Image (cartoon, rainbow over all chains, first blue to last red; front, side, top):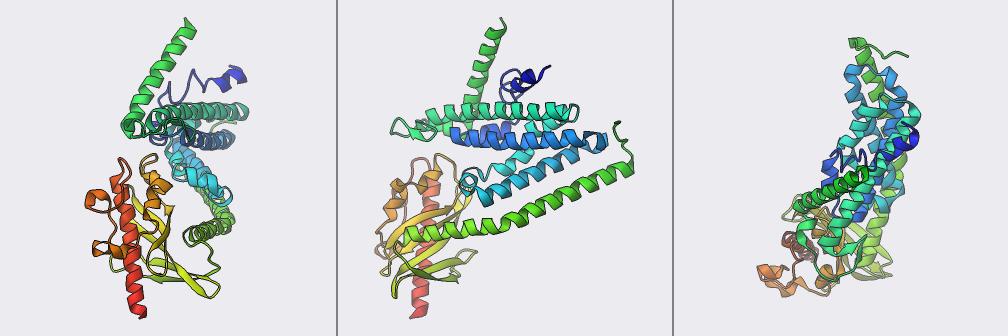
Length: 196
Length: 194
């Protein structure tokens, strides 16, 4: 597999949300607007790239029986660093995303890539993998957020196009499941056609 | 390079080293960002006071313990030159849909509300978060709680004058609760100073 395929697999073939159904907790909880989805996706991308980088670097030094605790400690450290740095130096952005940042620690996409990819592959591939998976995750969350925002609040990235209250259920948690279900069906349909 | 074997000593040392480095990195970043974070919080508070008490030049800060509630309220007595133009009160409530809500309420010297500003909230985005929008919070502007029963401002569902946010009555009630707490503390404070 060349690096280009390695990068693009995160978007469709192995998209963490639409295909692998990983990281459902943040994908459903924070996507009530497109901006929230995008912000959470990008913050996750950063942590994913950094943790893949470090874990790939130290993969040969970790005894396999304690690899999971080690991965979690590495991931948690990066999340803490991101959280504190954003609070101090990018207060505006942190106010928007503050409550989602600590959630990244328990995002199984990050741990999943560490376990399934970074601990077995070279440094370069791991970084590319983290970037591709992270951006694929961000894309999925933004799409989900956009759909829910469009129907739930009649707005797109905060720009209101109908001045009325939206269909409430899309903002609430059941709407997240409904929207996700339809998006997965759509993505399946597209990939099926692409194969045929 | 071969993988390290999972002997007890290897596992112990690996975890020890990894956690030690992680905690060192985290505490270094904490120390580095402590100053900027405190500065951001101070600026935010300053801005909130400015919003609810426009035109103040200096303020006196002191804490007041309310009769009900677990935490003290922070009073900012605002002055324009020598003249007292009102009090901004950092108030809170625990009955929000997601718990804690903190607001800054500005009272004119006669007790009428000058303005309200949301400081901290974790309400449902798209529903409860609408309390920070002018459509909801501007309803409080100019109201004097002394005009109401029991000196309490309430949503229309509870017989009050505030139109609750659609599908976020709990948040609207909590917002009123925080305003009421600030007003009660203000009244008590006035009595004590007489």
